[in-house]
Image (cartoon, rainbow, N blue to C red; front, side, top):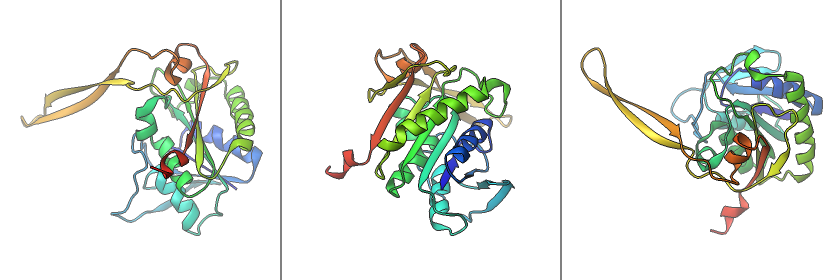
Length: 240
């Protein structure tokens, strides 16, 4: 049984990944009921969790991607998954900041803690629009690439690790590169001070891209147009 989740909610990327998962095994999707980017492995511990059915085999929670993983394993509402696939995220998750902060990867961190093998899929995009089919490109070719990579990674999957797969914007003919060289500073933080209609100040935090580190996962995806795959293992932390 495969659980498919993400941090974008009910998106075109989710539906493509679910279609692939169903060709590999029995599968269902459980996702946040709204966009939950950059929540990392946050859990909902302070309010009720509500389960909604969107359609056959697609459900949502008023929670986080990590909540979705724990709910699928412990609630008794679903068959316990033997694998978690997270994504396909609109926007890449390259770099150290994404490893720490991404909700897409947060689902895989939680899966690894529960000894459930997992893979995260993300795709570099220059524009917003994760809910629009047209912005994704050739769905058939993307699904074929996801299926191929999943099958190639399956023999390497272990309960205490996961893989982060980052696609370039057009991954159909891209070369696969395995790398653990993660880009350090993806964005330079920029905080703008503004004023609301009542005259009270508020702040808006954004970020602009910094220079690309040659050889990093971000460089491979954005400049060389390759597919970057990074292996993340909990064993790195077990012995301090």
